[in-house]
Image (cartoon, rainbow, N blue to C red):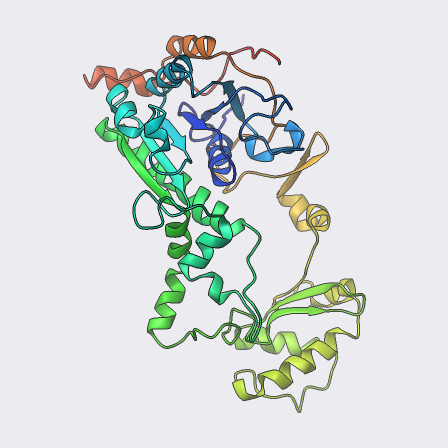
Length: 406
């Protein structure tokens, strides 16, 4: 007999004030791993769109809200604020992504919530952080990545820096870092019975991602001139190249053994080619590699390099990635209701993440939700009570609430 599991964060309750960008993605990460996440959205406006729902997007397409329930609350109303306070009192985690001071003006700042619930983990996810001259300044992913210094490095030699969509600031430096901090704080609170405030800034998270580069710079092994280093398109054997059909391959043949394997399969006479690490010859080497790849279609090159250590990969579109045999076997993606979902990551062997399900537009009732939470204490709540530390009940991750439809 198998026992159904719904992730390692089963029993953790999360209240998240609706927002855009990193806040819903952090909520999705926690929900994927079993947390019961409830998003607090303002009542739908006249166009039927609540805060945090992307304009013009059907709910089932808003993947960052998968596994997340919704309550509609008017935060400008004392009744609405009281509803959120009651939810926070019964929760383990509270997430907000407003500019510093906004939550306090709403009556939902960390001092207020921690007085109601001393074990609460209060996460504040912003661009520039809660302190500093830029704390109140508006910005987007591109601004935080620029402020960290990382955007400067994302350019080919002599070209303008190119932002990596909004994957680096919003999601890697922001949401992932915030989710990591939340899990750390929840783990500590289970020992101490005390919550804390998390100041998660996208700027900080992106800066942290540059740690290895900072070490290389200090050692004199990384130039501040973009497009001249091994990993920033400076090296011709770590770059992308167009093929005869206009599609691309990615080459990562850094190590000498990999590089020898790479050039041996290009179907050219490379006896007169320059040495791999002769930087003065890199422009000529790049031209030779480009000419070689231009002779065949992308998929032909993929077959030539398949199963080798040459570190050459076809550059796939999203649809191609979903159909690639490796990704299919590992179930990297899953189609849910016709929508392509990336499956949760990383993979846990004993308490795997939840399977992706379509986001829903149904709205939960606050009173019913609180009633169900109070009726289902978790083993953790019972153990805390036995130690005399008090605290709230934490349910087992199942939500018995029957949502009311709009």
